[in-house]
Length: 381
Image 1 (cartoon, helix red, strand yellow):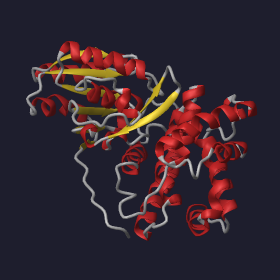
Image 2 (cartoon, rainbow, N blue to C red; image 1 turned 45 degrees about the horizontal axis):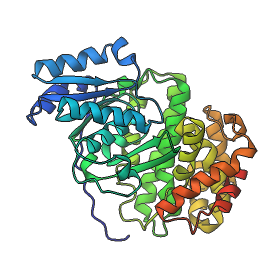
Image 3 (cartoon, rainbow, N blue to C red; image 1 turned 30 degrees about the horizontal axis):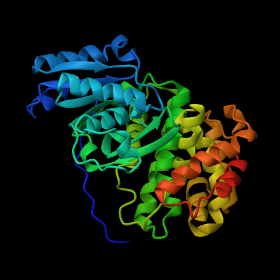
Image 4 (tube, one colour; image 1 turned 45 degrees about the vertical axis):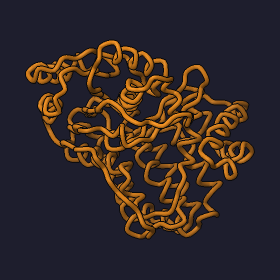
């Protein structure tokens, strides 16, 4: 195990009805005006909006709204939010929704206190020195954004999907009420499951130093996600399964599974970000296509860990059998496992690889993931 520093500043309130705490929590920080970010109008139809705003009003907190944030969030909407936040002099940002809403909120929080173009943060032209406080009420469990300092946004002009990372955009408080995720349709439950698994196996399979304890944490998360996904696909109202799924999603990307590991990379996310930027495919659906294809290309570079993955998670004896088992499980839960299933032709591979190659250069991994290598991986899909 290598040396590490672990610190996570996000407070979690987990359980039924916990959204009622939001007004008090924000008011305790002497905040009296916020930007309220959300996606669809569903939160108004199902009563969540009324519950949250009632508690804001009770605590003397005014709000302005930014609705209509889409899956695969875009820079133009972030810029709209930044302009609104500056105009209204808000003191914090509250996200109600899934990872797309929260990633947008984090980006707005950073951009609202920056004189330049917020995209500077995504391309490494500037560093985030400060941000408005961020709060979250999650209605979808998948991204882990509720307990980390990451955000991913697509530049809708350049079709680049990049991320920011900063201690300043960790949510101050994230509220996780598993009941609020119950209306997520089965296809997005499946995509969420794939995303969670991707978050933990990227480091698990690429780190050259991977302590057994960290591996066991990863394997426990993957097993939990697989078990609870199958339960929820049959019975969406099973609270205990939904609660375990929700908490597993948070643990998958809050830094705990990679503490003590050697530097690792996130190649599956890097490749998928180009798929969703170019074709607007759901992130988890894209990952279901990319992961088995990447695993086939990469497994000989870390044979012992791939064999462990196959044995512990699927009871298989070889890496190839483990890869096939994971791909089959993705298909079983309704996720696409080939480019053609997502309506993406072989002729698009070169275009995708060019887009990914730009990201690989930015992330400092172009010596591993050249355009030709990326094309070879995509041909596996």
